Amino acid sequence: MLKDLSEYNIKFEGLKQGIHFYEFTVDNEFFAGFDCFEFDKSAINVELEFKKQSTMLVLTFIFTGTISVPCDRCLDEVDVDVEGEEKLIVKFGNEDYDQSDEILILPIHEYELNVAEYIYEFINVNLPQKRVHFEGLCNQKVIDELEKIEQKTEIVNDPRWSGLKDINLNKNK
Ligand SMILES: [Zn+2]
Image (cartoon, rainbow, N blue to C red):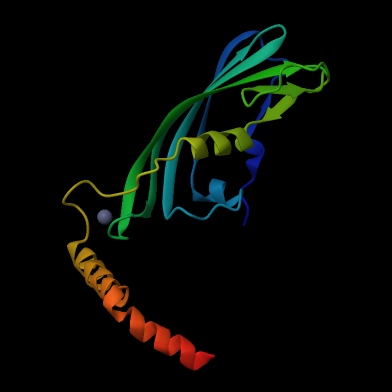
C-alpha cells in the first residue's frame, strides 16, 4: 500500500511572513511511494525551515538518520548515516527566471506545495556512496567465502587456460 504523501503538503497561503518549522519522518513506506525498494530499513528525520517572504519562499531541508543496506564488502546488513542540508527557493510567476535545480517556479495563484518529491530527491543526492561496516565489523565468514570464489575466478581467467577455452568455442561452431 502506498503511503499517503499528503502529509508533506504545506499550505503556505495564509501563513504569516517569517520562518516556520516543520518536521517529517522518512521511512521505507515513504521510499516505496517513489518505487524505491533498495533499503532494508530507513529512518530519516527531516527538519524543514520554511521562510515566507513577500515575493518568494526559501525552504531549507536538514536531514539526519540512517538507512540499512547490504554491506558492499560482506553483504550483511549495515546501517549507514545519512546527513545533509539542501535549499529550495520558490518563486512565482511565468517569467523566464534562470531555471536551476535550486529554483522552483510556481504559478502565481498556487497556494500549497507538496515537499515529498524534494525530500526524496535531496536524500538521494546525499546518500553515502560507500556502504560498508566499520573496519573489523564485517561478516568474516562471508568474506572468506567470497575470497575463495574470487580465487577460482582467477584460475578460470588464467592465460594458461585460454587455449582450452578456444577449443570449446570451436566445438560450438
Ligand atoms: Zn560488512
